[in-house]
Length: 296
Image 1: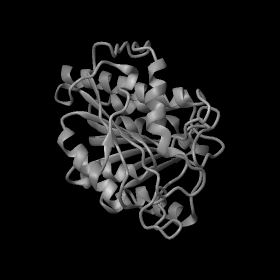
Image 2 (image 1 turned 135 degrees about the vertical axis):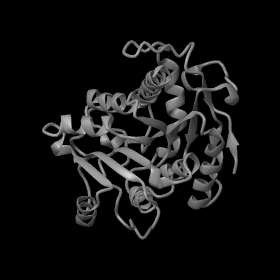
Image 3 (image 1 turned 90 degrees about the horizontal axis):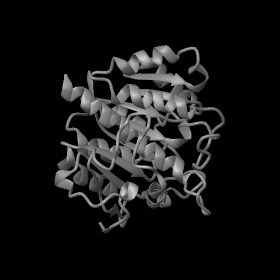
Image 4 (image 1 turned 120 degrees about the vertical axis):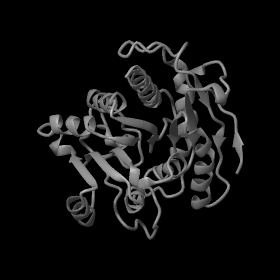
C-alpha cells in the first residue's frame, strides 16, 4: 500500500519515530460515506492548518517545542479494499504500542484498524466515543463494515463503549444500547442533567482506553464541516472537559485516539484550524496525564 510523506504536525522539526513520545498517523480513508464527502482530504488539511497554531498551550502549560516529542508518519495511501486498508493500519500501529498514537482521518472505520493494532484483546478496552451517531447499526447501505457500523463491529469484538453526544440513531441501535451493559450512552439531550454523572463515569474508567472523536459529535456552531452534521451537540468547552477527564484519569491508560469525519474547507481557513487545534489539545492533555502517571 502506497504511502507518502506529509507536513509534520505543528511544523515541528523531524523527530525519529524511535525517539517519539507520540505519533500522528494521517489516514485519508474515504470508502463508505453515505452523504457529504471530502474526508479523504482531511489529514493533509489538518496538518497544513497546524502550522498556524502556537506551540505553547496556555491551559495545560505544555510547550510542544520541548515535550512531548512528536513524529508524524507518512500518509497511508489507499490502493485496495477497505479490509486491506484496515489491516494495513493495524500492521502500522502494532509496533507503536509503547507510544501514544493519534490517527487523523478519514472516515470512522479507521477506528477498527487502530484498535486491532493497539491491543490484542478488545475485551480489555473501553472506547470513549464522541459522536452524533451511535454507529451501532448492523448494516448500512448493504455494508457490514462502514462508518455507520464501526462501533457495532467493535462491540461485537468485546469492547466496552461510552458514547457521548448521540442524537441520531435507529430504534434497533437504541434498543441495543439500552439492553447491553457494555454500552453506556449519554444522549445529546441528556448532557446538561447528566453532566456530573458523565464525568464520574469517565473518571472511574480502568485499564486501557481509546478516544474516538467524530467531529459531528460537536455542535455545528463549532465544526460544521463534516459529512453528516446534526443540530445540537457538544460545545468546545464540554469537549475539552471530556478529553481532560479521560486523559488525566490516573486509573486508566489512554492508549490511542482518532479524529474522524472532518471535511476540510475548499477555501481555507474554514474549520481546518479548529480541527488541528483539537488534535493539539488531545496531545496536550495526554501529556499532562502521562506526567500524572509517572509521578504516582
